[in-house]
Amino acid sequence: MRLLFWNTNKNSNINPYLISLIQDYSADMLALAEYEDNDMNLCELMNLNRINMIKCSTVGCDRISLWSNYTTIQPAVQGRYYSIHIIDERYILCVVHLMSELYGSREEERLEMSGIIMHDIYEIANKINSSQIAIVGDFNEMPYGRSCLSANGFHGLPNLDPDERNYRTVNGIEYRKFYNPMWNLFGNFSYPPGTYYYNKSTLHAPMWYIFDQIIISKELMPFFKSEELKIITECNEGCLADKQLHPNKDISDHFPIICELSIVEERNE
Image: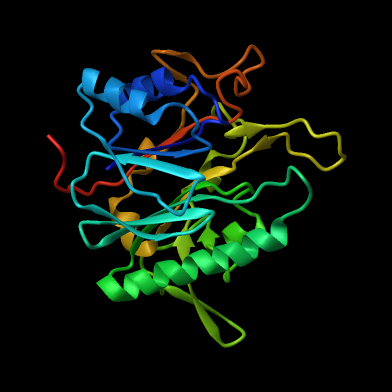
């Protein structure tokens, strides 16, 4: 499964880029935040380009849109900031778009929401007897932010040994560990050093941010292809960066990400 996620920043002319990205990066699933282009037109473009994706139901979550070429995907819990789906009755996919810092700090609210999301995920996991969980989307904070890293949030660690125990105990409470591979994309060893750029007029500002992430459970780690995790800056439709190599805001203020899990399910042909 090759999953493409992008916050399209309410661009009403984003569909040609989406088609190009799906084709260029062989995506099986397309998850979007802030999608406000014409979805009927996108479906028509998919048909014209022989892309066998169908739109998944996200009723109850206006912040997320999802397309998939898997026939065995079913919607589960839908909240204001998240959309959970079950693939083949054993894989749990949660797409998130958490609250931003645009109008002030929302750190505590994101942490509270992450706990609500994890509660719903665990209920579904218990119901279908599976711990194969992937959480992807715009978390609106860095991997080291409170909701992403805290044990009572998504608990996305920068390193997780497959041989170590699944849980970490804090104050007598056990919290399941998750792996966040986005930690590996920080810094200038490869371009780009983030998915979002903002030169904030404060003394404490990294300027480059990794807001768009994937966090996976330990049970999915054997299927995760680390070499396929990428922040995308270009496609055949055009470059997604401006002259300063920051996200081109005329297209979107975020770069998309692509990742791959080597699971094979029944698809639309």
